[in-house]
Length: 142
Figure 1 (tube, one colour):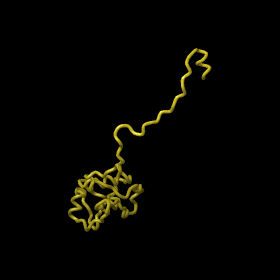
Figure 2: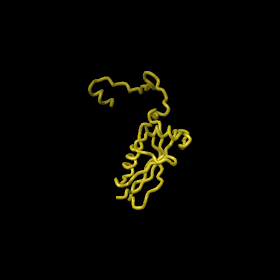
Figure 3: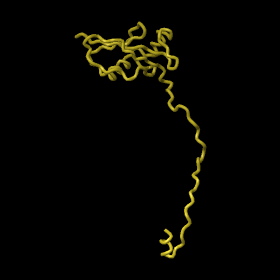
Figure 4: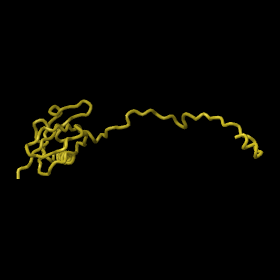
């Protein structure tokens, strides 16, 4: 390297000295805890528990998750649509959704059910709030 500069009549540069890298620039960063927060509108936890199926209902996929957090404004009809989509259920299957001993209607919202049945009739999970046990399905007779 020195020969290159001497042949051309140039001054040999001094070796580069490594510069210390500043550790932080600007404001110090805050250490964050858990970033995920459950939105307050997702106030109902559903326990999706398969109770059974009649003979001849066909094949269906098992659910990947046992618990689902949803809005209290969701209806039993929404829960049924969710189950049909996730489990690839045949349109001829009837899905019955049950909470305790109560067969639930499609138009009922989850919040209404919680108020009508009461907290004591619903399973309680300490961290997630009230849980609804749901679903049984059968093939509709034609």
